[in-house]
Length: 341
Image 1 (tube, rainbow, N blue to C red):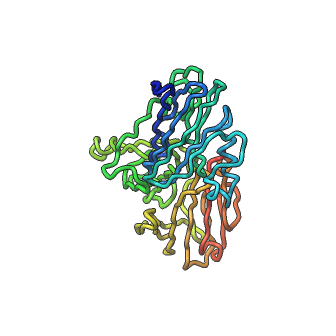
Image 2: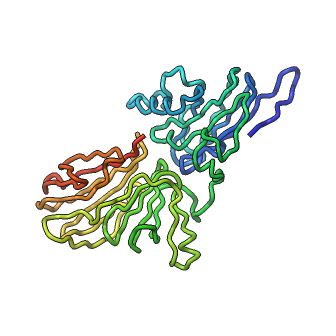
């Protein structure tokens, strides 16, 4: 994106760039160019349902700045998730949904590629772009300074859902690698998962876009929805949670909404199990929170693989991808699956 500056009373008009933060952890403008030393007015518009900012950094410092923002911890909100770093050049505050901020600055005089990134926790892995100052942009498909989806030419947010892209979203729909009773859920922070009501277990998790339901709708229920993001975890162990010894008898009993997110209710060997899946905030990932209030028997939960993700559990012992808990421990426990940077 390049705008022409016209002189007025001896002063060049500032270059005006508008960038929209939108659903799926995306900026709608992933690159633009500016002349060295030019005045720039960058307008950030948050059209999403979660908070975002935009931080412009020195060349090659995007990941370092995003990681430094994560390390702010409890201080993050007060600092708008902008770390005290020489690598930060300019930054907007964190914008709530449906708000706008205009960032005014002079482009650096040294030619180079200057990244910009959303440093709100968990967003920087997907939400970034680049300002080209005094250097030519490469072909978009070969530009490593923009997200993968942008390199694929997917820069427009396609409207797949009649009610918009506001998360959480939930579909009872046919999904790849799941039984016909699959449930696809889009959480906030660009996180998604497939839960299998037929087998009462989590099948896989991914980040980025949600699903394209049209293959199912066009096929009159014979097709499979398409996952639009990138999978980072997929169950490789068969079976659902097990209570006691012997073969588990499963029965799905539905769900209730908690802050728009489904808490699944199912029964294992005549014992009620409740499972709520929520997004992590510090990294790309999810937390599975279980409640098994009326149980005294040992519980085992297949959670593998864990070696390729950042995995945590609040109780029990983990061995060979199986988490085992006493009946008391299983009354309320959680497991977290996060994307390794």
